[in-house]
Image 1 (cartoon, rainbow, N blue to C red):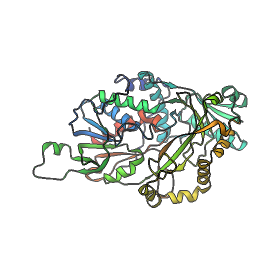
Image 2 (cartoon, helix red, strand yellow):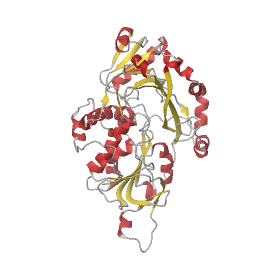
Image 3 (cartoon, one colour):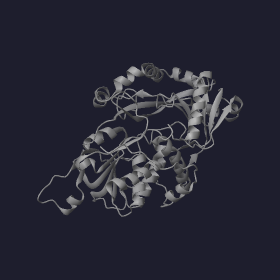
Image 4 (tube, helix red, strand yellow):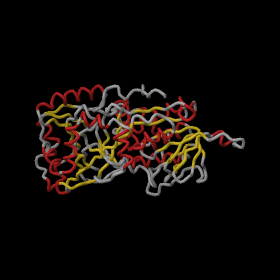
Length: 463
């Protein structure tokens, strides 16, 4: 197996840094609209590509865009199992443009989030995609949280996050009049955007550059075409067959997988290591009633538990004026299970028998039980929210949407905290690059991730 990639480039410190401007202005086309076509410059009968990207979420589409701009002579296709793009993790998140404060210094998450935030702001300016740089307060409401808050502040400085300040009660009140807290980190660089709109714009750029998008193409198998005396020159040039559940196939030379909730299964289909396994965690949001919208101006976050990759229930303003409260983090019994009683036997069996989930539960039983309890009883979530804004009552909130996070878990029950990218061995493995673990902040980091993937694809596949 290829070693896990480690990105060695520097972080980009400004939204309009020279790198961002040069990288993004390689192509300038109108943003994608509601009439997004299925295919780009290649005809609908085309079934062979130099590179096929599996997955039409924001990471897959950003990678397709970057590869098509960097290698205009190559034919590149994206296959997506749904009838539309960016429907799952990309289209079901809080829409926060993260600043990069949370992540371990020198990790891929830290580097790519800081760089990616700069690129997202620059891209949205270039394409006139609406966003709001509303900032964020990470608030300590208990005395014992203050040392953790100060440590997080130091981490943010190490990661090169712009504009961070530690503020006291008086300034908290100036920024968020209804928020109580002893101390907070002011993160002015945090913003909000509609990531599905961003992803569709990536798709339009990709198609304008000649790329093809095949929707309703659920991958069932990835294999090397069998040798035969009648094998055509086209078959020899494109030795990998990517087949779908309808019996159709596309041929290619190389594959990049960005399959999100199915990244482990797609890896296994290609003959590569299925570990780390994906464990789906559902996050349920509440909605603050419109007449109570005055209570929240920007993002308000708790001090996170450093032992877990979840940031805790928080307050997030959306571009449409709504305020989302949440999410929690509970095991989903289906990989795309957005309702509490969605269930898939295979998904559940794999979590129990193929991953380290039982060990995870043993180590974090009280946390998991508390999350389940909050998911069942709305009043319990409201009690947590009242620590920050006491004026909120149960009658002020409604149940809202939900998303499912694709969280990688190793066999020892450890949540894989960083992004993971790897390949494999053998005839197929040497022609495949897998994005194995790309949860939050992957949307913020998508353009930076795509640049790293393009560099690795060029090096590994000797394009």
